[in-house]
Amino acid sequence: MIRSCLLALSMAMSLSLAASASQIGDLRARYLETVSGIVSLDLQFTLQSNSYTEQGRWARDGERQLLVVRESDFGPGWAAFDGVKGHQVTFDPERPERIREIIASPAVPLRLREAYCIDTWLGTRLKDSRKDLAGLLASASARVVSEDGDNGHKTWVIDLGEHRTPGGRLNHWSVTLAERYGCLPVEMAATPAGEESGAAHATLRDVGTFRYRLSDWIAIPDPLTGGDKWLPQKMESSYKDGGWTLILNSIRLNSSVLDADFRPPAPTVGTQLITETVAGQRTIKVHQQDELLEEYVQQHAARAAEETRRLETEGAAIAVRGDGFPWYALRWAAMGSLIIAAVAYAVRRTRLKANSRE
Picture 1 (cartoon, rainbow, N blue to C red):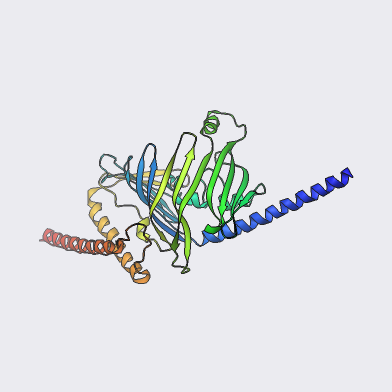
Picture 2 (spheres, helix red, strand yellow):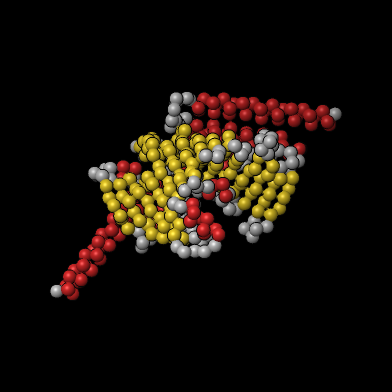
């Protein structure tokens, strides 16, 4: 009798585990379908914490990524990865119009791996995990803890198990997926686990659970499908003694980002141009005065031409949160100014060369 009961219990547990694995497989497939449909994002954001505030732009187009910090308590910042090479720009905090250094590297710049970058809360890259969310959902330890809501509005809380960070720490992950938003996460959490020793691990245990919450979801028109996609306008990160809030002021979905946007700004006099290799070697060159004007005109003339081509093919439709101001008009005005400046500079340079020959 006891043996029969144990056998029945074992079979029930096996069936339950199989059902849970099948359900997680379905949720993972729906999640991947949603994120694969987000080809590009171009966002204007405000980041607020207890100690600082930043305003800027974050964009991703395929493998290419861009972060521009326009206003910050620490001064402006710029970082980009064009799919092959990364660039990170450091400005002079006392004279932000001047650039201290531009680092070129085959790796993705560190600033693009910050926890507040949008890939973090889409789950396509997690700051403290060797795997992305799809990888965690595919792990054998993933199991559905609870399910709530009616059809179309269901949410699933999933225990993802323990996974090591790139640095070797052990975190216990969990995620809540929402059916209404295409099984995108509405909350993720990572709690330090294990008995690792050392000051660094002790400090991280003191920080406690790192939690991401996503809210203020909005339906954004998708030009690729003609339908809408749900995206959050607010992301909150919290841990034991702090946290920060990211608010999106505008969202541009699946509209190509200009190639020129991924090129670093023109260096100023004295800028250190640093080139790094995979082997960790680096070369340093100091930028000189006679290289500046020509580089500036070439860069912005190319940008103006590219913007013209993009507007001719895509139009100027932009999903804007707020007053709906026609920002494309400013783009046209700026583009015209750049072309005029380029022509004026070319004429002036030609005259100077002619005078020097005389």
